[in-house]
Image (cartoon, rainbow, N blue to C red; front, side, top):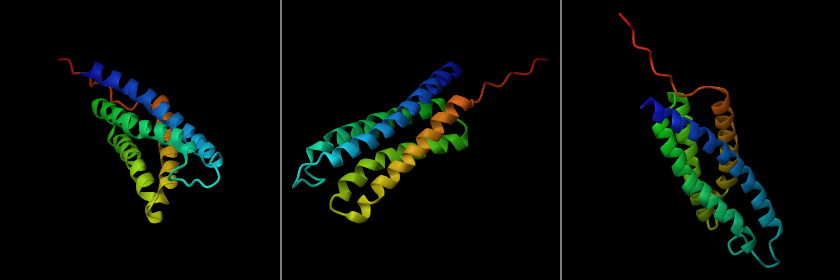
Length: 144
């Protein structure tokens, strides 16, 4: 079982780092999409935001599920486990905030705030994953 956990941990390190880079790309894509909007377009029907929407869906659905599976298999220390679960929950909430925010400004205003939280949290976890061992090594059995 230890080999499976170590393999999942190795995968989790790299997926977290790729997720962090993906969030950075999302900021560029939304900037491009907003400044490339045609006259008369609004956020709801702007085709220039399609790259942001599509890539965001991939990050929120595919990457978040992969992060969750790898986190549960590698089962890091409790504090780090909670941070990974928070990352997954925030990632899954993002598309809900975006879709509901089109018609409810009080919901939509949290979309960029959660994006900043995702940037910081994924960056912190990626840095921590490459600088500290999170998975506990197997306990050596005492010899008699």
